[in-house]
Image (tube, rainbow, N blue to C red; front, side):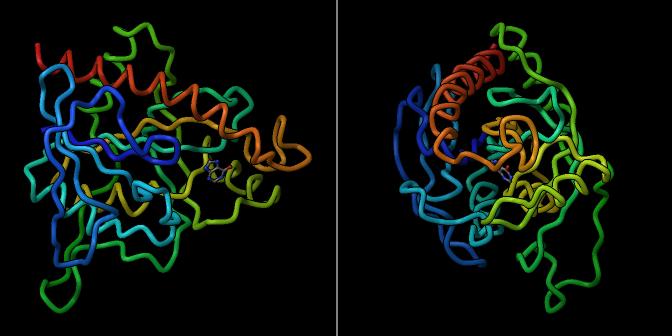
Length: 248
Ligand code: HPA
């Protein structure tokens, strides 16, 4: 079953026919909210708002472990993460949709593994390719079928937040090879890999990163909402196409 984790701007799925909501208890504490079960075009999906349904949980306080564990416990097999990002590369301006293929993790002090020392021997996972390629291809196929332009591949830099970056930090991220920057991509992707979920992301560029393009003089937060609303409408129809193609 497909699960969708919605980020800022996607706390609800308008095209989801809700059948039930379920509070899931986990060994890692509370998920961001009750899981919403419903159907899109008669196919069952699970939805979870990463920042809570009232958008009250900041990126560094999201309980990523509880969220991923809860989805897995309810028999999700695939997870599409929708996440707002800043565009570092000049061609990745506001409104661009990207299916990234790499991650660099700059976050710190987050609970980032299910393998704590008390109950496991030391365990490593392969994370060479952090996203599930099969789900990436399904997303790209859905975009093509929906006539939606989408960029395939790119490196997502996960920063700690909740503040935005300095211009110098963005320059450093670019030198490191990052194309987009967001605050929630990690440890979510690694936890999904640890627990065996096929995980991919749709990154939605809602602003130029600090010091770049229209953000040369600073990021204008007041402009983000309108971009996000428009882009998330496109994401919703892309997800609908994804589910429809899966159902065929
Ligand atoms: N930086 C980090 N996270 C973000 C940004 C950004 O510029 N825009 C949206 N999420």
